[in-house]
Image 1: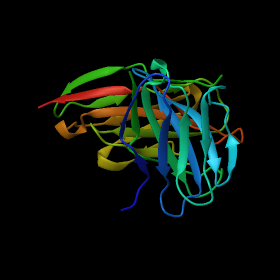
Image 2 (image 1 turned 180 degrees about the vertical axis):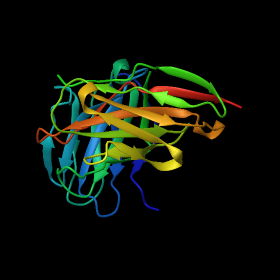
Image 3 (image 1 turned 135 degrees about the vertical axis):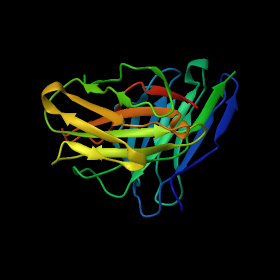
Length: 116
Length: 114
């Protein structure tokens, strides 16, 4: 049962380092969403990507964060020069088509980032 | 901005007790509504969803939810809880503004005592 895969599951970084989080969508899915869950908060939308396109990045911090979903390979969420406030759980979700009113997002297990 | 409220942050129940978790959202209009569950150490799983039609929807594991449009609510219910239902429960809403993202509530941490 190949669901949404994320790796690593846990990532520890020191302040100033780069964090790279990977997400492989479910087989046949070509749309990926990234969400962040800060401690004691709900999941917050960051970015929505289709292969080779960023569709909506309205939830991405303006600096240090970037995302991509290349034609081949997983989607990558990159955080440069991490700070302690970046410590959170980062979840990826995928769907098989864009938009519509009958779409369900399927989530991965998340990557828990800890910045020391 | 759109928002989703879950008023119960931590709920503790005994086995066989009934459950109702509240979920309210801020705006009207056309919405898609979801409840997700996250068991300890696992990923979010879809419990149930509402897109249209019968406002009482049934999901997996005996859960159901009722959409009340006039109250902007989508409360989750289960008549008899089991210890294995211990998990965190998230309500999520997608507004039909041509935007695909889900807006989540802060979650309810549910502990079932045997």
